[in-house]
Image (cartoon, rainbow, N blue to C red):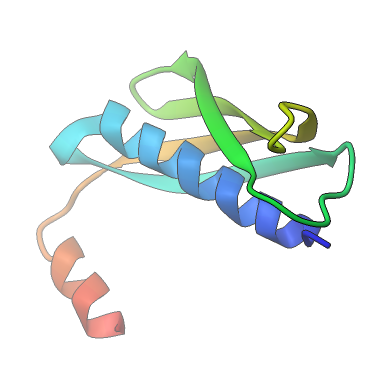
Length: 99
């Protein structure tokens, strides 16, 4: 049975990637709100997630993410809002040091 947390992780990943692409190389996306509604369980097979921009601003980006099963039935609907923060000198070094 697909855990709801796995759907949330997939949704946040897709929305964050979209936000980073929107923000470009001068911004970093930081998730500030994730809302997931789980519609049905999935016991086997593959799921597919599609992130669609709802708002693409200068300082925030919001995506609707729809996760569907192999038959195209909606499994989860999520909404993610990311803050788009300016990249500061040393941000990359902090990320590398954390790992």
